[in-house]
Structures are given as structure tokens and as C-alpha cells.
Image 1: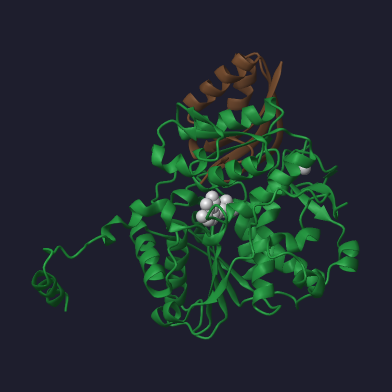
Image 2: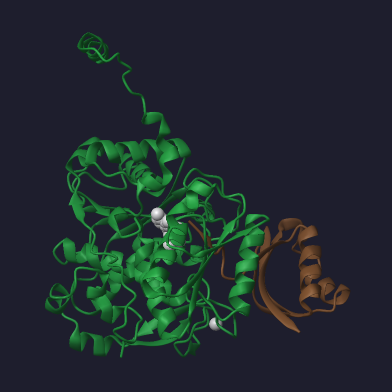
Length: 407
Length: 80
Ligand SMILES: Cc1ncc(COP(=O)(O)O)c(C=O)c1O
Ligand SMILES: [Zn+2]
């Protein structure tokens, strides 16, 4: 058995049994998993964690699953590296990168989907589904393959085919929906309502989103059981950002660390309603139509926007929106100083980090962790301009001439 | 009979219009508001509509034509 106790409404506090549902029947607010921390504390220790598997399932007690039948492609326990060259570039001496590009399907989505797929199986679903233009689709389809479940991936009909190969290869049924982004959105919510399917980010969302807490736990463990002074986290719906903070707080509650004082910095695209609200000093998140090169963060109506703004307030953090140009520069800087090819979301993180240092929000020696959440191989077109070969004849002279010209 | 939950966002010039009242009058729909927030320059309402599926869709189309933004209550579900 597991340690999750109930689902609780984040708005009115009403409690519900652990079922595949994501909204409060009373106020339609979002539901969140609650745990029995008293009993977790009896079995979970630093030692038990350290003796656990080298995946995010070493934190199983804090994930909302009941049994041992995990749908596991080995998500998590990714490297945390000290970034000396990037740090020098930015004026930071104590900078770390959490490299989540190296997950099985090359993004942090494997963390949320392993929980969602496990939970879907526990609930007895035979079909798992999502709507996605990239990372999530690949992860859901891979986990479905591993679990032997039927899989549906909804995509907008105008999505370039290249974007979806990384999901199609695992054999899901692709449903290309004609119509606007909003219409695809609406259709999926309706399908989730009508069919007995596990829609990972709709009816399974309370469980799904808990997987992101592992990005908090791992960083604490890898830093030697402490939290950073600053964390810089890319945001779309704002879920990952809020859950990393939840992870820090849970580790404190279990006595593994002192009260966390991390300043949580949210990083996203220009126009994000979360940043607009932050800049205006409100918590009113007004939906927009996103326009950005950072497609993985292009959410115009962020489900957790309001809660992300609460986390900013609670941690004296910040929210930064960066331009397409800054995103590309950030990707190149990261790749060319640390050898990590992050996707556009990684560019967003690095560009935001750069701004935060410039603004004096992060000081030179502050222990800082920047989250790189997906691989650049998925968004290669963003940095096409880097391909500028030396053109030479197949002779040594021609090569030497070309080489001279580069000096 | 079908039920569907939505979030309506009203721009400033519509905050004072009885859109939801008219939605219930002009269409065979029962409107049931669960949460709302109205500020000086905009407002949102989270509500459930009950009626025939086709009627719900006609009602939503009419509301949208009237410059009200209609979203699913769970936010955007097409993720990157
Ligand atoms: C690579 C990457 N980073 C970060 C995020 C942010 O996720 P969230 O919706 O939890 O804010 C996403 C979401 O799609 C993503 O694909
Ligand atoms: Zn509620």
C-alpha cells in the first residue's frame, strides 16, 4: 500500500477519495494529493533513500502510488553538475545545472508520466492518452508501450510531422485534430469526460503532476541534503515550478533538511500571463494566445498560474519572461560552455538566469540551481544558424587556407 | 442531457452585461455558477452548463461571438 491519503480541493479544501478525477465537484477547483506524512516518516530515511533504486522511484513513499507494479522506463536520478564555465560567463561561482535532458525520452516529462501511467494501470484503465505537440507525447507513448497499454495522442492537424516522430515511433494512435488550438483543447477535455480513458493531464492530473516533486528531492539529495539559495525553473502551466517547491517543503517536513529558504525563480516566454500578472502585482492570470519559439512552454491558459504566483510570493522569488533571441543565445551559451544541448526551454532558463544576475537578484557566490528540462535535439531548428562549415577542396592546401581564414 | 464545465473570461466592456442570464434565456441551457471573480477591468466565471450537447455547443458559439473567452476549467491541456 502507499501513503497517499486523499485528494483535496486547493480552493475550498473539500476532500475526495483517491480516484481518477481532477476537479472538485463543489467549486470546480483543482484537486491535489495529500499524504500521511506521519507514517512516511516511520519508513523513509536518508539511508533508505540512498539504498533505493537509481531512478526517481527511490522516493516512492512520496509519490501517490499504491502498489509495486510501477510502469518504469527509469525516469529521473539525472546528473546535477557544477557549471564552472557557464558560471564564469555569467559571474557565478556556485552554479549547478540539473540535466534532465538525459531522461529516457529526453525530457522531464518522463517523471510525471511514469506516475500517471502507473496510476492509470492501478485504476484499471487500458487506455492512456494526452494532447501534446512534443515532449509529453513521446513520454506517454513510450510508457504505454512499456506497459502494453493502448495509447492515443491528440495533435493539432497543422503540426509539422517531424515534431511527432519521437512519439509515433512507440506506436500510439495519433489523432490529428483539424481546428484551432482552442478547439483541440476543448475536444480533449470532452473526450476525457466521456471515455473511460486515462488522460494524463486531465483526469489523472493530480497524480501526474506529483512526479515533478522528484526534481526537488533529487537536487536536495545531490547537493548533500540541502536546498539551493536560488532555483531557476522553466514554466508552462506552472506545475513543475510549484511542485519542486513542494518537494523541498516535504523534505523539511520529514526532517531531512532545515526549513527551505530557496528563492524560486520562474522562467518563461514573453507574453506569459504568469509574468504579466507578476509584473502588475496581481494574481489574476488572464489567458493569452502565446507566440514564442519555446513551443514546449507555449501555454496561454496556465492551469497552475495562480499557484505559481503564490509560490513566488511565499519564496520571495521572481518571474522572468525572455525573448526568442535570448532563448537562442541561452541555448548556445549552455551548449558552448557546458556541452549540454538543451531545448528551447533550457534556453529560457539560461536567459532568465542571466537576467537575474544582471538585476542583482542572484549574487556571485549564491548556491544556484538551473533546471534544464529537455533535450535540444527536439528543437534543432531553433539553432540552425550554427551550421557554418568551412568549405574546402579535398587538398591540404585548401584546408590550410581555410584554417588560416578562421584565425 | 449533457453537462460541461467552462471558464468564461469577460473583457472590461462586458463585465456589466448580463451574458450568462441571456445564455440561459436564449438557449435551452441550465447555467450553474460555481466560482467567480470580477475586478475593475475584467472578470471570470467558472460554471457548468447542462442541456443537449448540440445546444451547449450553440450556446458556447454565441458566447464566443459576444467576445467572451471560453476555456476548459482545467486550463490548456495541449502540453509541449
Ligand atoms: C521541456 C519542458 N520544460 C518545462 C515545462 C514546463 O512544464 P509545466 O507545465 O509543469 O510548467 C515543459 C512543459 O511542457 C517542458 O516540455
Ligand atoms: Zn472545491
